[in-house]
Amino acid sequence: MPANFDLMGLALKCACPTNEIIYDDKGIPSVMVRLPKKTYAELGLGTSTAVHPAWIVNGVEVDEIYISKFQNIVHGGRAYSLPGQDPKVSINFDQAREACEAKGAGWHLMTAMEWGAIANMCKAAGTMPYGNNDYGKDTRETGYYASPSCERDANGKIQRVATGTGPLTWSHDRTPGGIWDLNGNVWEWQGGMRTVYGELQILANNNGADSSKGQGASSAQWMAINASSGALVTPNGSGTTSGTVKMDWVSNHCRYVTTIATKEATGRGCSFESVDQSGLGANAILLLQALGMLKYDSTAGAYDGDYFYFNNGEAERCFGRGGSWAGGAVAGVFYSHGTYPRSYAYGSLGFRSAYIKLPSA
Image 1: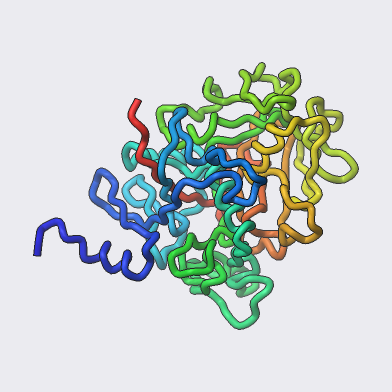
Image 2: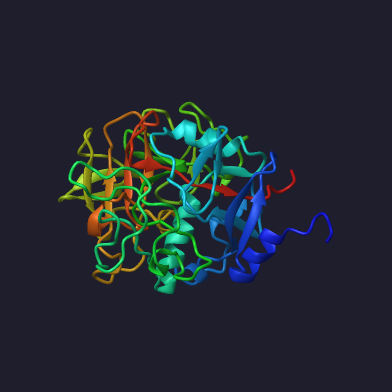
């Protein structure tokens, strides 16, 4: 048998053709799901044949992105995607990012743009995943509990469950080859997106996949979104950049605007379906939809009741998505929680790494 014959990888590919075992620069494996390049139209976002920004890094299109099949653990300061594990929690934004980037070039904290692509992919395919959002099970399922991976709560209820131990309904495409636990279990930190006093800021396209593009609080990579054109512009640092996309609280829901009227420093929440916009141009709207931060489908109930939290009164807030074991019916792939400072660490907040073969300069 040739020395490079990877029996484990071959077995995985036979069972799940879209899955690959990718080794980091220490030779330790992670189980990853390959997502080939998709257009807006292929993700159910209109008719445009332009490539979704998740597959554009440093201005260059990439053929595929690899997403951790499982919520990650940390071993030796590095993030790994492995089945049957207790996902790492009580980790802040920068620690999660560092655990991913420590694995070598192309490894990164899963970005908001990647999450948005997957959420829209699930929506278009009719496979919005279930998950551990009801103490070991999904609110819509009564006959299955996943395997607990930590102590039960004071009431004897299941909290976190072992990665990948749910049924096929918990997979993003409802096949064994899918991405697991995008709904519930633990919240997942998202790279490449934040708010500053309610102004939404992102890194261009999927540049958050390149660790050389800084995501520190003062990084010059953070860009605001021109509400008229959708172009990225340098923010002024106070969240008041003229004409950019911001989050306001209007008539009991979040509305994307250019000028905030109501500050909510403690955070506000509404259904994802009720989030709307006022005064934004078509390109800005499409960018928000690509991020999974604004609905495309206006059909009642189209987003499974997923919820949306934001904070427009603090200097910086980062995002977690998906929900936790206690998220209930409002958890899901369009569930967003934009109220976390980057220093926040809690027992229901984890993360997921991703990998892209970075394009040559």
